[in-house]
Length: 304
Image (tube, rainbow, N blue to C red; front, side, top):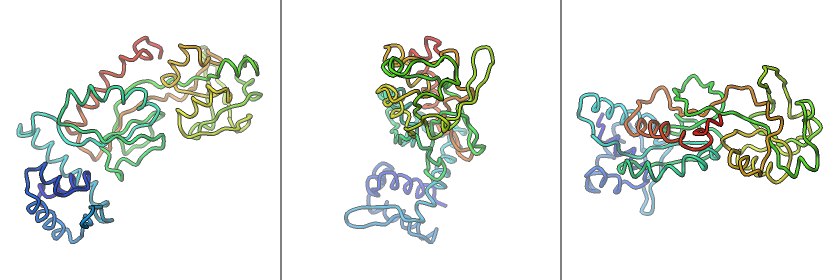
């Protein structure tokens, strides 16, 4: 199978422009069209729908794309191993990340990363809903929580200490809980992925708080929205310390039961499918984030 044709297909799928993909690979438009048609004939399927106005992926193209990316990655890794790969990491890196963490800590670092690696482009998809890495053809993803998916490889980026907090105005109006059982009498802002709070304190005492048994009138699936609701006086919430660190420092939020935290061994992970070769562009982004993230005060000051 012609790997140049597969590489052309991957670029065309990313750009939705066959001519532009061909130019990036040094092909004239007619040559690019012919090479793609040859690949489609070999596979017996139309991979891209073409019209005079646009290019779009066919159903067969969507199914073939993850395998095509893997073939390209395998070829690049093999060339690197033999000393024939490009000396500079390059290409488009598809990166899925939880929106709250990315907005606070990834986006401010991207200009520095792109300046260091000018041949890399980043296609960043932000959502607190987890993408399927393989079906979505992602090179890398950032996930926070307990990692249970055995189909993924992971590098730990940081700890993810989760704490209880509320706004000063809420605590002034409703009072401050003195023990975990007191939370049941308070308004709680629930998070869809955390219906139960397994709490532990510094002496090892534990308590399981079930948010459904409380006055839980708000449930969200986005960490930033949960923080905004907490700051607005919506109630008590569980937040990652990295998410609310600045607000706690400024007094806009207050830790509730400061000796207690969520006991779930959560962490922030950089993950990628086991089937994927760790290409240069992925490796340099992982190394860059591991180097840079801990320069932020929440980790640099050993707040975790």
